[in-house]
Amino acid sequence: MGSSNISFESYDASVEDWSSYVERLESYFVVNGIEDKMKVPAILSLMGATTYKLLKNLATPNIPSELTYQDIVKLLSEHLNPKPLEMTERFRFYKRKQFEGESIANYCAELQKLSIHCNFGNNLSTILRDKLVMGLKNENIQKKLLAEDKLTYEKAKSIAFAMESAQRDVCEIQNQMKSEPTKKFDKSRKCYRCDSTQHLAHECKHKNTQCRNCLKNGHLAKVCRSKRNETVKQIESCSETVPVNSVKSPRHARDKILLEIFVEGNKCLFELDTGAAISCMNVNEFKKLCPDVAIKLPNYCLGISIIL
Image (cartoon, rainbow, N blue to C red; front, side):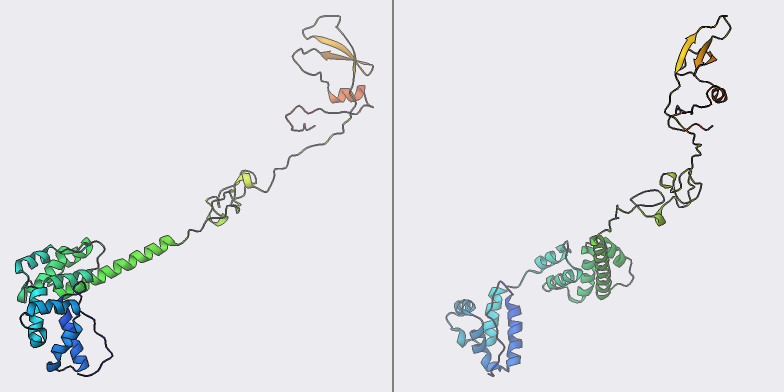
């Protein structure tokens, strides 16, 4: 028995079945150059105390060291891995479907594992193909496989793996796009065409709109920088108020009610209008009567200067 730095753990039924342990153990024998005559002491040393105790009970009245290597493996196999019933194993196989979130590769591996004791013989590949297609969760992949002519198990796996990978890549790209932060528009910046804070001028729908103020295209009147010119003639004003000295009735009644009023010592004839707030006279007549008095024109037009 050669020496080796490769360690080998004891058998643990919660980790693997006995047949898998034996397969790995025999590979260990090959690596370490263990000959047949040394396999019994090797397996007894490596299996662990719990398994050795079980073997000792199974071998009674013999002791384990008196058994051959094949007898040891058979005794433990019959106890730890009793031969399963074919119908039960097939029931488990046909009942198995792909789980939610399970990869197709893992699903295929589980189907192949469940088929070990089903005794499908030469029909194994065909049955695996059928069960793969029937048990898939993804309907798109399933429809694709159903439409394939002369579909084998290997071809079915290849198509299913490729479609699953492509769909996974698409989902990852979409998730990355969703996770990217949305650029927020700076509301401190405004569109000079319409004064909106939701876009800039190059995106504005009013780029060809005619302004009602300056009649140019490209902006609205509310943001127009060209102000309308208001033509105003300035007149000289004076703070002096012309007093009315006296009022008397005319001697003869007429169709119009006329009054004689003295303005700056000059007698003038005015028409009486009881509904008017002020009394007015022609500016030319006033200048003739009062050439030395400056004129102050009050504003009665809601802030718009009168043009003379």
